[in-house]
Length: 248
Ligand SMILES: O=C[C@H](O)COP(=O)(O)O
Image 1 (cartoon, rainbow, N blue to C red):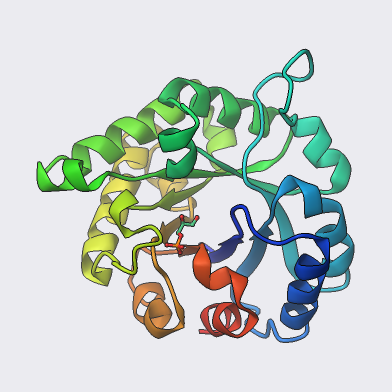
Image 2: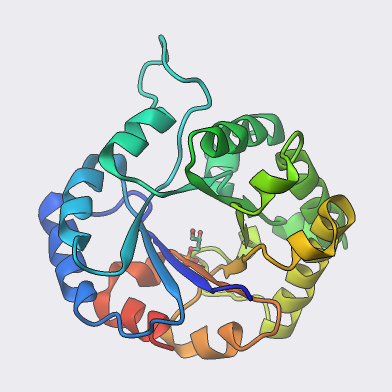
């Protein structure tokens, strides 16, 4: 039985005061105990958010990390640094990082492996661009991204991974994949995982949908059989909106 995970990805939003205010508005009102709730905030407010979520069932996540343990990597953040603050989840391979920061399937794989080695729970993002969708390449792209990200990941490690299917054309655009369509792609990603790891493990892996999830469409999306939660961007910045999604 998979427990759905609803993660808010704040992206590059919220200084400390705003972050703490938002968490305080959220934490008393997260009533749905059938889902795990994660807030993936900027590095600069991780420590404040960690303090603010104490005593609630909201978990802390980061939005990226480096694959090396330490070294001369100016501007980068290691897994140990995240662990030191109390981070549990880390988004890896978000399309914005692939698109704007040269993240490749190879670096995504290195990061997933390092996160697992350090006992962080990766939220691995995969998804096709509009161009790829229009060329009928959605399934080929998500299969390739998934398998490359999972190279050298053991059966045991696979049980700690969360996958997020995020069609790039649906992110921040107000366009969502139809719930049935998102469900079909997610079911396919589960098949890809099954081919590599077997049915028992594939049935354990939560696969989220991300891309313009909001209060108005959350229930329909979450009610799909294969969709195990959501990775929420813009709507996670407004307490009322995010709470409506979490308490769907
Ligand atoms: O990580 C979250 C996704 O990129 C979705 O963002 P969005 O909800 O603003 O479309």
